[in-house]
Amino acid sequence: MRKWLSRLTFSFLIVAAACGFELSEGLQNRRPGRPGWQNVALGAAAVGAFAAFLASVRIRHSRNDPSSDRFDDPR
Image 1: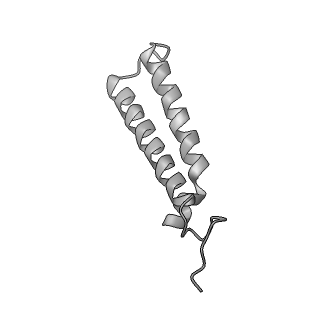
Image 2 (image 1 turned 90 degrees about the vertical axis):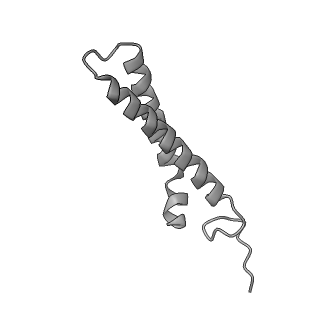
Image 3 (image 1 turned 180 degrees about the horizontal axis):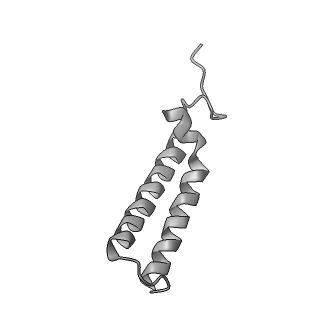
């Protein structure tokens, strides 16, 4: 799980930006006919994707991640 989370770091950032953009379009009434619950769902998705981005950056740059350049081999 940690391996895939660290590989998808940039994808989480793109999803968060796309959801944030759609949320801002909805809040500025540029998307007529969109119910309010969709704006709430987009906001929650943007926050969740950004949190996953931050978690994956932390995993990717940890000392014991094999996919990192700073992997300390205990052998």
